[in-house]
Image (cartoon, rainbow, N blue to C red; front, side):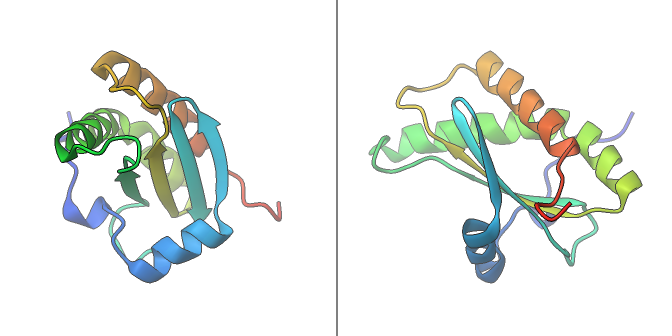
Length: 130
């Protein structure tokens, strides 16, 4: 069994790449998440870099925002291996932004179910020009 980790190299932190992702990325909604993805070249050992956010406007308390992001990271960490295998076979790299858009605090089970759906959708990711 492989280790289920979420390392720093898997986190999207490049300002240039984040701006490019916001400007050119393809987005879809799987409630309560908005997903923005962009196929790009990454200088990382991992095929995906991900950024997870919760809006300050809907969740003014940092405790709530941090809890939402913690749940998102945990669900991603436990289920990402399927996406990683698919992208490695296809020799693709993705930059992904997950934005929590609901106004209520999530339960872990719902979060995990939706993250699994997002991962399945990302495995079928096609660039807009294809």
